Length: 260
Figure 1 (cartoon, rainbow, N blue to C red):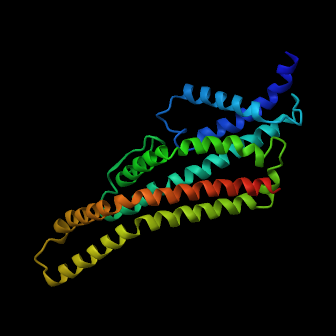
Figure 2: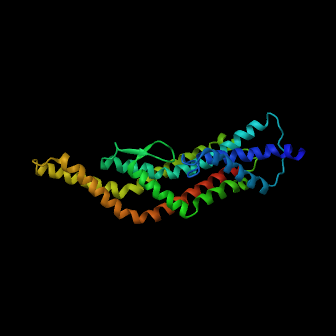
């Protein structure tokens, strides 16, 4: 019992980091996953991680454990949030295309967040999730959070990175990269729909008897679906590159935190 109470605070700190990671990380944070399973799985992974760590410092039950808990929760949330950002690329790109195709008013419920999301964004999200599971990306996420203690141990001082603005600058760069990736993913569709609008504008000037509003909406939907059909085979390459960038950014975040 003495050993149990001696190592219990250390285990709880490990549990805090892993649980906060699962709260935000893609796939694991899905609303379709029962809460009981999330808690049990977090305890299971925390036990495995705890037994692989070399405990060099002792943690006591006093007020000093509160900053350690906040630090562990912050590290888990940061890692999960970076992974979640890159999963939102398809939602942002879907919003761009839906506004051009006329689907902006027809939103569906996203099963991961429980909020409304664009139709094409939800379609791309399902394809992205299947590819991510097929390449064992969820295993790589587990490996990342379990091996994060090699870069950022329990007694690491992450607040120095927040104070000097390193983490803030990294998050701004990640936002920029995600937005640029979403725009690149939808650039062919946006260009095709823009040329369709130009053609409809020329038709409205040369043949005013046509009702452009009636003709334009179905035409833009057809053009959008044809371009989407041509782009679907390239999703495997696009999403693979996106996942590679996501894991590189997570590694870079750990390097930035661990360098202090």
